[in-house]
Length: 458
Image 1 (cartoon, rainbow, N blue to C red):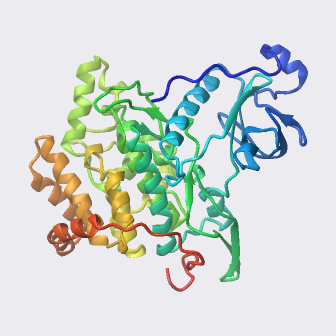
Image 2: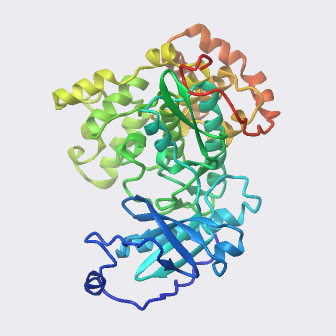
Image 3: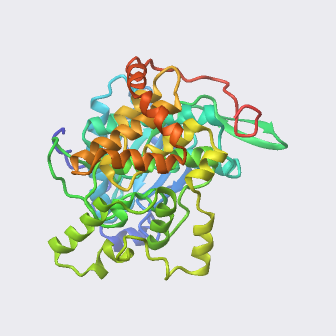
């Protein structure tokens, strides 16, 4: 990791909350209220407001000749004003440190992680400057009334996202907030008439991973970094985080699997707002929590001295099933609508299903690594049997290392697929699949690909 950043220069003099409130620069939540035409930093003209989130506000801007971005030939910029609250200022410093490390190792800008081109202080706010990218996947799905993309587009998007996450993991960094809002297109948005409605899509499938405000640097392999207890946006949060257990890189793999499902279907895989319902949905999709997960919950109770009612163990009965007695009528209806593997197999292409499933497992170590997944997706032809075999191999290896019989992994895959013949065939194809994946060849973005689902080819 590079050395710590130097303190940011304060261009307008330090001032307290009361002074900022009197100037009218900030709103009551300490968001900076930029004005159109305002010049900030070394020469950035504020053009328009783009978004506002928990950490701050984003404005579109133009870099003038005196600015750092203009010297780097970046004219259209995004100005991210961090809220003037100490914890968010500290988080911004961490984010910049992470981005410096990622950008320094990606001199060719091929790994598709957002580029930090400048940073400074403006009236008590940290400001980060990025190139202005295209719309996010969330914006595109919303414009399309939450109708997903077809198989070809989904795999093309998935390829670029997997490549970015694999690169981040190779630098020993967890993103911890993979979701549609944090994946943006690098090209202009186009639209066409599809079934009587305008359908929006980027000019090409090339995507960029943004927002490293929640990223965690893991340091050298084997290091134990400080881990905040809660990471990942709710709908993309893995079971180990829900249950308060130790977590690592596989949190991003889980979120990625949820993201792939949403790109194809247009809907979140887990549409929920409470842990009990969320865990019940996991159980419906993946089957009961494995013994290894339940043992980790018991170990946590023993290690912390906390009663089971204050730990993740409280969500399970003595048989290891999720306790659903406390669900409201609305939550039960949501659980009934939650997908099963059988439903996914009926409604989705086999390749998309296997891509999603090899990322989802109760036990984090059983998920395919993003490096392996990126290698598979970069091959000339993505075969669902290779993805199925990759999931089976990861599951067997992890369970064996945990002292479980490898055959349990095969049984889990057979149950998950609901088709014994399919799982056996995938197992036979494993060796061939590895050879084909090993000959991976990068794909260039295909321009003018077929559009969304329902276009006749998805």
